[in-house]
Length: 215
Image 1 (cartoon, rainbow, N blue to C red):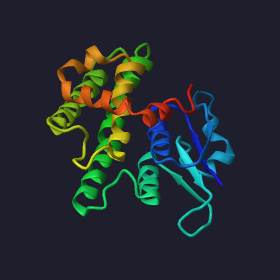
Image 2: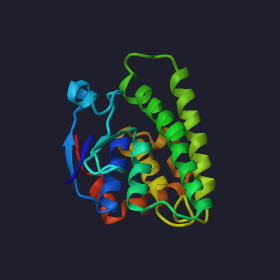
Image 3: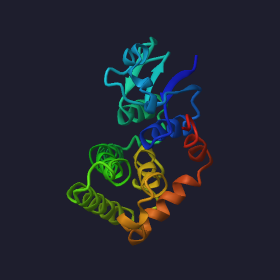
Image 4: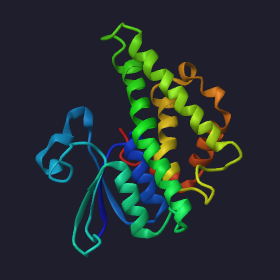
């Protein structure tokens, strides 16, 4: 039986569909339009009590029984452990991967999301400069962390393309394409980050995964 994916092609949604494609797992995608509040339907809340996409139902959980998994970072870790792919079995590289996944979950995603909110969605509701300054400054700082990490590296982890890359690069894509924020963030000032983003997107399975559950 196939894994059931409930998602939308936002950066957080892309992470999981990319992983499913890259790992070669059988899955069935179900698009949930968060603009129509579909994520609050009782059937979905039963899968994710936090009413956020993405979420999966694995009919073959660790004990052979169906298992619901929510939170994109947790899903990436779950799928990596299930398949043994895109996370190293070397303890040092494994924990490096987990650290960078959490770096995205705690930093890049929330800060980029807040930047996008005030730059795109709330610009007609909030004319005070502080929120945009606050979040654009923090996104630039985080981009600097990524830039330093990626200097001389193809991917975030020396072992190769991993769930850390899958978690993070969609947010750079989002800043550039969804939010049209390249100039504000100064993406041209982070050449290693931008080259890495392109390397990730050139992978056929990753490119396919980015298009799953499109708006």
